[in-house]
Image 1 (spheres, rainbow, N blue to C red):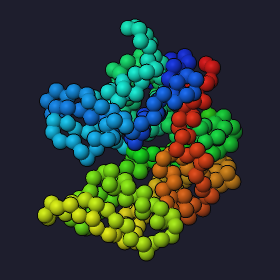
Image 2: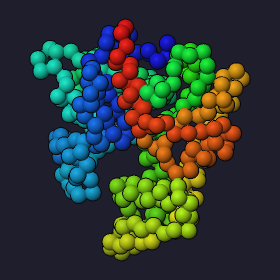
Image 3: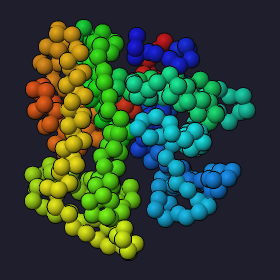
Image 4: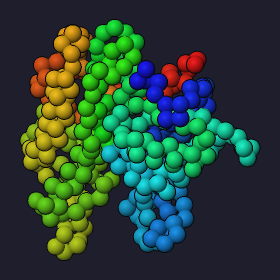
Length: 338
């Protein structure tokens, strides 16, 4: 079964499960309790020479925008896959420090979610980072399948169901039936891609520089305004004028930023349309009857569900536990007896 695919060929019960996301990392114990749930960030000293680990998670987040050489903030993942092996290793080691065996030769089996479209090399990098962090048996599981199970979809049912998992690094659509993925597609970038698009827009059009954290706050502000149909409203953001390098706060019309928003949503909608176009007719009918389900931290992005529904003609809704769907899927997977 696609859902039970393993990077190691082993199917023993896992000791822990890890939702290693671009924005956040969550570690679950075998009991289902959360052992760690913090931002996917690390901080190193002397990164250009021999990097020394300083902090990770929430502690590293407090340093964002406030560090200077020799300190450097590093995000281990970009677009859902590892972009820095040192940072990935140290974050995984930090996040699992309380749940790994204390004895020298203790073994830890872990389920780790990864994008379904991750290449074999990307999966090997994830497994290698996990083993370097002290996890002896990592098992890589496709996140869209985890999200579908966590959102309440019965994967083994002889009916088609479609989930669009909206993460910070990648948005993936998958049609599932009889325990397998019948059609899938993805757009790299996810919620973080929209944040970077806002940064680029202000830099190019207004010659104004803002950091990622400020852009995230701007994105949330714009999202609230768009959800309330306040297209004529203004939003403020603080940053630096490129010409003079001086701090300043500027006001921007939501209508201007809505164009950036719509470009991002259009790419996701087109990807979903393509996946539906590759879906067998019988399963397409099931999807039309059941509707599309959005999961992931970016599922509640303003206008996303509306644009997908308008572009596909399929009823679209956000899962009740959208943000925790992958973690819930991991919890369910750990509870299986194999």
